[in-house]
Length: 409
Length: 89
Image (cartoon, rainbow over all chains, first blue to last red; front, side):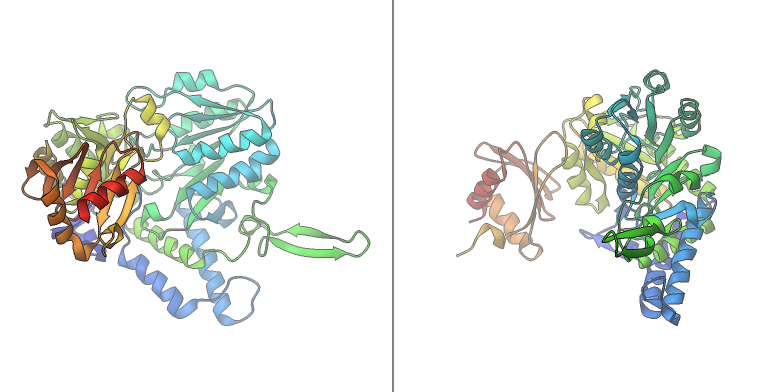
């Protein structure tokens, strides 16, 4: 079992007070706080190892390259990928999905093809496909969700066809916390000869994700939602798919050679090996180092413990919140179907009123559409307040949160 | 001569169907700002003297003792600037 009180000692930010109250941070679906192990790794990198990676022979660059490559390996092991060749470092989930859209989609999707997404999607898994469809003229289709926010698998099966070239879905919804059955969707997608791209921004930080067991083709996640720094994330791809894909950003590092042909007066380019072929320019080396420290921290805690702790907190919060008639909770009420994300409203108040009220007492929650406007429109909601938990949150914090919600009523 | 910018640190349009504005007042002027607003606006309700439900003309808003306010149903940022000027200057 995980001890959140012990874990909190690793997070310097919890010494802070906000408006003279102890900080209660319930916006973990947006970003997480950082343990001193991650902060120290970043500090150590800049104080002792900083240099640009690859193709330099001097000591510091060798050290920096080794750290950066180790970070890829560590992330690969964390999700059970077949080595660092299958892990491309990007800025975050959004960039990873855009990379797939433009490095794969631009060359593979034609007017007779379809991309199948779901209505539970974060905007980052809608906008790149809608944008690209204006260029390549393919159709974007949307699978429905049920009233409780769970994916409607029947609608999904009705929507998929042999025209579908890629299926995109979130592993865990960033609004309802619903865990989608990715393995089931992957099987159906593959039956139709389609690829599957998973937005795992809300699952990799909270569940044990095994890309082989799920049999997904592409999977994207962000470092900052799993204790790591902002500006770093990863795209996992099956090696054979990544090898087929064209590079997204051209520049240094992603090429082996650029030779000038004096006859044709043009340059010929030979691409670098995976994963570097997709990492043009100087990468976020320090971000990779910080992400590696975050992964090691989560491995020490144990992903099963992370999941169990969040389940306990979610069950408790659901029970306490349902004691109050004026609090409306959206999504399933069964904690085993979801991660620790709770969207809600308080009758007669806007979500922003609720968030500002709680902020006065040092409690940080998010309000609005959470970058998932189509899902809110489907639920006929103007916006929602959202509390989301992580390893350092406690039952005592939930008690305080619920007590204050009662006061605002 | 003082200006709205002397009191306001940040204005953010909320995300959601309700296009409200959240105004964060400058920390060092927080108390003065709250007092100025309370003098001019009409109080409908207060919770623990730290949250105030207020109206000013046709505009309804909520002011927090922590130096923030949420203004509802305004046409645009220009209208908000005008309301803030009337309240603060």
